[in-house]
Amino acid sequence: MKRPLSDYQALLARTRTIHRPVGPLAYDCVKVIVVRDGSAILFSEFGERPINVGDVVLLGSNVLCGAEPEGHITVTTIYLDTDYVMDQVFWQYVDVLHDRLDTPGFAETIYADPAQVLHLGEDRTGMLMPWLDELVALSIGDAYRERFHRMQALWFSIIDQVAPYIHVSPVRTSPSQRSRIRPTTPRDRRFAPLRAEAREVQGALRRDPSRQWTLPELAAMVHLSPKQLSRVFTDAFGKTPLAYLTMLRVQEMARLLRASDITIAEAGRRVGWHSRNRASAAFQECAGVTPSRFRTMGRAEARVLTFETSVPT
Image (cartoon, rainbow, N blue to C red; front, side, top):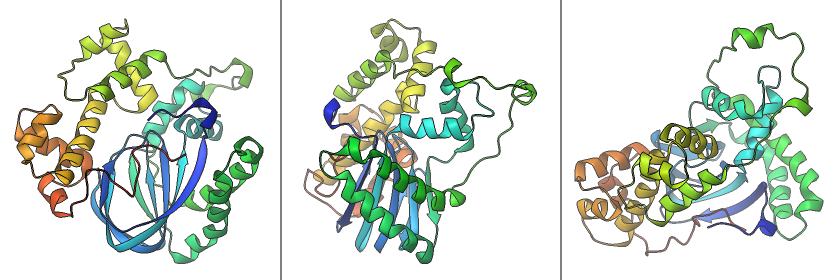
């Protein structure tokens, strides 16, 4: 769901207790989830992993993830706009990045794992609780602009404690980056908004994920070459158009399996896959569990009550 511009927040937090299986769902933002109480089995691209008090889950944007609570689990989730995060990465590594447009590719290289479970321990996560509670309180209401700097200060305090546990891949800067004596000044750097073409293609895929889309067809829709569209879309959403389509299909297939008694093959056909094997393979690759394993995790009504499919307002 697209949020009204007046309701937009680059940073917000929510605390909730979950009693039933949820997901897999994907959010168009970065999520940092701190486990406060209880436990669950988390499933995502890394497969199935237990999470407990003292753990922090880091999820990149448009990464499918679900959970099966072991009784219950209480979490505080911080939602971060992807561009807001990319700006922070850019300024953190400003000595090796030529301009802002280099940041997504650089971040994809050093943060190669889009879903991570970080074991901070109860003592370290306990330090975060007052900051998390205040951030949640400041996220509610209509004073986001006035509260922004305090919210940002709280976020920086939290990520300062979490960052040492994030898995970062080794990265080598290019020879030209090493040899630059005087870095480009900020006023010469390029900051570009999300391309309209990327948003238009995303909207088309979301409206009709079961359609047999092809990259040339999508590219023609926005008057770009297939190669240009792949670059523009990946810069915007972290996935190629067809990988993004797969994510949408898996998300809808999960809803069908949870909400009805149709077969796995039929659920796959409804979302656009004619082969049961293809549907099962894509589901396991994106969600971390097989469709049959997901179905046994528990059934819910057609509408998931605990998690929304968009960032809460």
